[in-house]
Image (cartoon, helix red, strand yellow):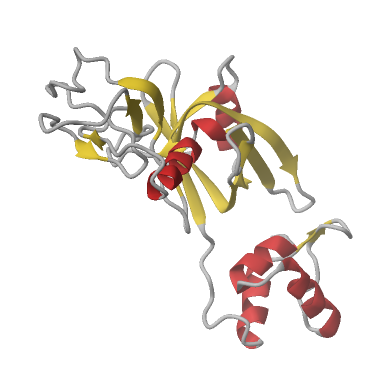
Length: 246
């Protein structure tokens, strides 16, 4: 594991781990990597952190699970150990997801995402964040073989496509839309914080025959957050939603 991984386990910044190495002669010696990016044995690091009171108990390696769509239908689940998710703050940017992978999983991920539009992430589940999904554009950005033999994989996708994953087992992005007008008493849908709606097909105002939307966007994504902020400041129309399509 890298210094950044040690820092995440201990709940401190990387600079603190660098200082521990300098001040404590018994800090575990690197087992691989380079002088700039040394790698350490995870068991030795955990034992040292526990002995020096940096953690209260040995910490299990966190994992992330990716449910990816297959081009011909169906899904496949992949595992990333010690995952690191970096979310862009602007819809024009990219989200990044990195972690340790097996050779087989990394090769298959590269195959599934090596298309003109990239792969589709049906569900990403990992500690410390909600479940995300991306309808397309997911690609393997980098694969790095470390000195200790581990394979560190980085995936990327357009931040504007990211949204909250559906609670259904098959995953998928929850989407809703901005209506042409505020709902009336006849509306059969539920409300969304951002002012958007997912029309109920039978709703006389926003149903299948009404053409309710001027803009669809991923629920829980960047656009949704911007609209929710406007709604909170009185600048957006409050609308409603029903069933969550994908």
